[in-house]
Length: 206
Image 1 (cartoon, rainbow, N blue to C red):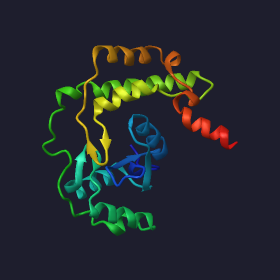
Image 2 (cartoon, rainbow, N blue to C red):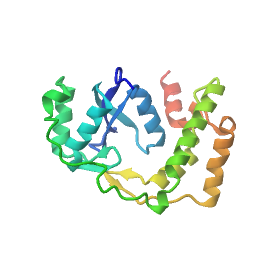
Image 3 (cartoon, rainbow, N blue to C red):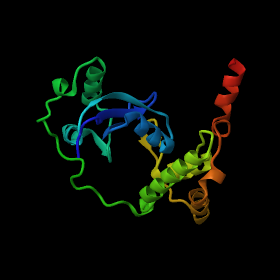
């Protein structure tokens, strides 16, 4: 598979120092939208530049000592300083010694806790269900807030750089999520329903 057109990106919650995600994709802004759907906070891309999955893995090793979970990293001064230089126009290879590997984010990876078993699978099902609904609808529809809250609580929520413990959904909550997956078009909400306060402000300003 060619790496042409891929981008390495650094992403974090708006208004917060971290956690910071280091990833690689063909479409960074599409990935931003995907991740924001499931994030309790609005996310932003701090920097992106052309690069491969090999570069992404190399960066993971260089910042392994800052690793938090999956592809997310704590906002340690060394990482923040590097990103600041990227934003000033400097290239990754000119800022970081890519031979200075600090470990592996996959080394001794713990097994998925019992409370999180099934989370990733259901998240993917929700993503594809939303895509089906958007393809069918004439409007830009969204997943209802109650389902967002169920999934956010299950994954654990970041607040002021502290993560709460994940809470597995109840049988009733699983049923609610499955209802959406089975018939997303009927359960999706419009822009005004999803963001009522923002829509009122827009109308007031018009």
